Image 1 (cartoon, rainbow, N blue to C red):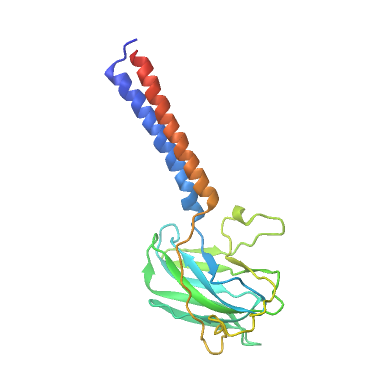
Image 2 (cartoon, rainbow, N blue to C red):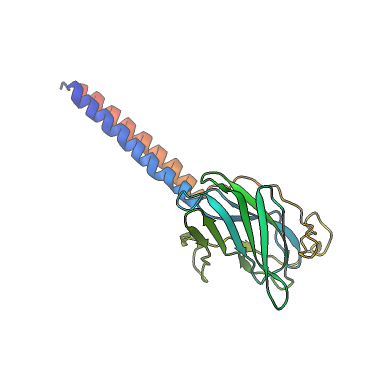
Length: 236
């Protein structure tokens, strides 16, 4: 059976298009999964202990550059000490009764373009009775146009991955023997501001998105091979 040049082009175009469409859909999964404000402790959180939390984001509000990040401090945190970051100014709101910090706002000197990663460090001391708690840090991302409230908290038995705008969370473990020692992060007392900045790393994409991406690329490659086989058979 002979096949015309135009028919061959249609077969090849269809196979290539299917491959690109499949790859595009699956690669969109890890990109969407990374569109959060994340928090990463520098060490395992323990009741009564100290640590440095790094809040990071790499996206704007539907593409609009980020101008500020406001982080609410939960009850399970006894004190906080924001780390001074180049290019950012810091403001703290305090409870009028006990003077504890209730929120910290980092304001960018220049808007952070969507697609650029920014990381902000916050020294903390966990409350003595915070063991076993999952502490949520509701965060509002303010942009030149609009804002995004990362404030949703999963209910009991609910998968946090299903939330549209999840709040960053930290799980606090039992008090450790060194919880009251003088470790590298022991300066996280709000009264002296001695917290040490933590080294940060790039946000790891969600594992589910990575597997979907790999599987989708394999399916796309299989589709292209199928198209080539069909073309050869048509030529015969």
